[in-house]
Image 1 (tube, rainbow over the protein chains, first blue to last red):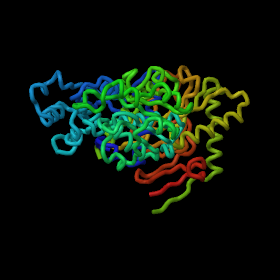
Image 2 (image 1 turned 90 degrees about the vertical axis):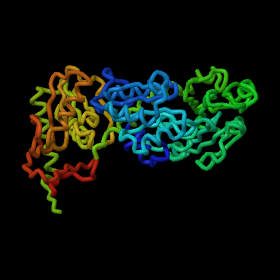
Image 3 (image 1 turned 180 degrees about the horizontal axis):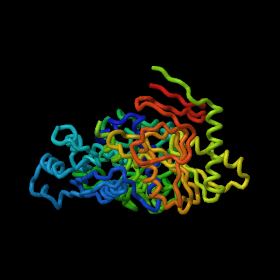
Image 4 (image 1 turned 30 degrees about the vertical axis):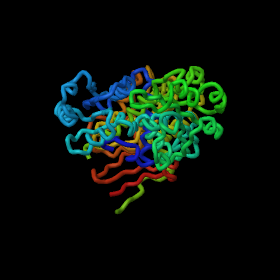
Length: 310
Length: 176
């Protein structure tokens, strides 16, 4: 596997083997010496055109656990603010010896362009491109679900409900692709204004009523962050109105099954899309997701940087 | 393609029994003993030696685990390999006598990787090596302490140790 751009590039077997590797790599975090030499001598660049402390730290930690050297390159503090193009930046990083570039960019398709335009030969890992995809987030969610429901292979028959701003959410898109690939039944729920046209073609069912979807007894509810930074225009009347209909709180939280789990990609807006009671509930796996994020990113870096000589 | 069976099930069983006795003799008993099988077939061999040790020594106090070496290989940039579980016994390996168990000893690179992997988990008092087959052609200064069978081979030949737990049959086969 040279690059990881989109979940749709992965076969089901490939996805499961990544999750299996991530499960073993998670054990490294429990050791006294949290380091393995698998990527010694490799250089990984975190190229971030959008602020994301969590994802960057997670990738940085994953690279360091595998003994790679890490360079963090943030748009606001670099020559990018002086008008350098994506192509020139990437070629400069490769000339400095980068074996892999982890890229986050506000434009959908940025990672694909770096991987396939012939500008550079490094491995490219998509850490979020616009409202297109965020594949490592979907992988860590799938790993968390596998652990929560003690599955070894796929997620066949598991009912997953994704709630909120589906339109702007690359997390939702990658998750719909991956979870359905693994056999889960995925429903997306959100206000009509935040529901992309044609999402059912990716394999998800669509709902416009949170309570109705909860009545279907989903095994997992994934609450999405409302991304104010991606909204130019009014998609809902007011935050209060959104919270009244779409937050996991009150009666809706009470309707959640006792064996169901709550996921959230973070950072959480407490009191907006999720109540504090829900966020702190034992059924909430938010911190487990963060820990699994490092393991999944280790597995992805290992997969893209090993075997590259062939 | 020609292949021939060089060891059958009774041969393998006798070899493992002898290795078990040798381990006990070299260690003067089973105190501080930790058997670590290297995936895939080393795990089955370590388990078998473990149960033989238990039947030989009623007061057996050794422990059994597995050690995956995938991430410590020196050819990672050539092949991507699936990572296998590492399960160390509850007592760890600090100050213990560790016996690494593998099916075939060839270049010695797997053992080198295993020695690297071990250092991440602690400092054993001693590390020893038990293999079902030593086929020669070492590329590193590594030698086994306990050997089931020395098999002189040509470098192009393939030696495959097959075990009931993994392959459904107990035999050692040499093929081209």
